[in-house]
Amino acid sequence: MAPLAEALAAAAALVARVAAGRSLSAELERADRDPGSHAAQADLCYGTLRRYGRSQALVTALSRRAGTTDPLVEALLWCSFYALESGRYADYTVVDQAARACVAMQRSGAKGYVNALLRNFLRARGGLEARLGADPVAHHWHPKWWIDRVQAAFPSGWEQVLAAGNTHPPMCLRVNVRRALPRDYAVRLAAEGIVASSVGPAALLLEKPVPVERLPGFAEGEVSVQDAAAQRAAGLLDLRSGQRVLDACAAPGGKSSHILESASVELTALDADAGRCAGITRDQDRLGLKARVRAADCTALDVWWDGAAFERILADVPCSASGVVRRHPDIKWLRRDADIAAFALRQARILDALWRTLSPGGKLLYVTCSVFTEENDAVVDAFAARTPGARRVPLPDGAAAQLLPGPEHDGFFFALLEKPA
Image 1 (spheres, rainbow, N blue to C red):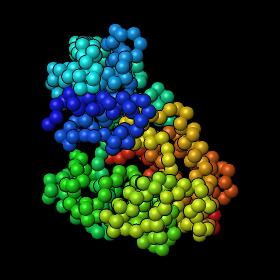
Image 2 (image 1 turned 60 degrees about the vertical axis):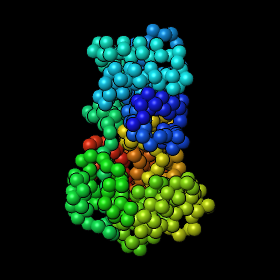
Image 3 (image 1 turned 135 degrees about the horizontal axis):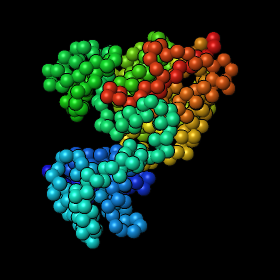
Image 4 (image 1 turned 120 degrees about the vertical axis):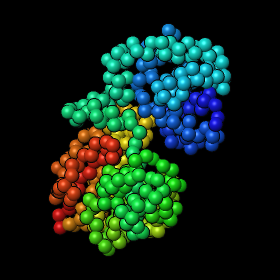
């Protein structure tokens, strides 16, 4: 196993780039990582980024330096705080390895500062908690504007929503019902020592996450990894064999594949990113499915639409991703309050464009992985108000439109719109 110092140095470099506005997933893809340090480095990155606000507040409370320190050293401190509080390492190990990481990062002059600040934290830990508890950003690990929006939308449960966003996400499977029965697949999992429970028609929630290589039949297309809330979409579309169906913002492709597993339909899957479209095709090849996959902006109808209407449309629109922040903790660092209005404007344009391609009597399912009302009910209600004949209809499963993140699933919003015949 690579020394903790190496993992701290590498994680600090990635976290510093995220704090400067870069995507964590993109940075991880570019990183040249030794396989031995992969798990430790990823844990340090994700754990540190989930704790938005807390680590910064700790540095402010403990540092005697005026002004802002070196961004790379600051990121190292954030990662070290997480390492100390994770329980995975002895305190003295983290302090020692953080100092060694300064050398690896070519910041030898910061060794004394880092050592002193971390030791000061260990001595003052108890007294610091009361100070941090009075700071909502440090206490809830979210930006203040985010906290305010969630509190306004869910006055009786806002703290639970924020707390869920700081947890490790659950791992849920979607059994390919064309190839296996969910109950039979659960038995196969049990034989491999993998405990799972049913949380939907084809959804199995794992007690503990496992590498996909351990899942029996994964390579053969018998099962996929997909959040239980995301699996709700296919059922809400009221699919029938032979229908023309559009998945307008399809990448990474899980919902497209679920549609094809659920009914024999003629599916067009669009996404503006050609690279992600290739991923949709690869996943469907694994599952033995086939859609018409095209790289195109769904609002540019003259580029991709042939004029033949669709009977069902899935509009899983770009959004803040505030309901899946525990899977992508860099979102808390990258999003800004003004982004929400920009997303809502884009979502409105998508609805206006796609409505033109929906057949009379057809249904459009609007989906976000957001918990912000401005991207959900506000967008759908405004669309229905300005669009003659557009009618929001009850969801077929009778459940709430807004699913909040919890132990079994992420946060998603669903609204079904029907066009008059």
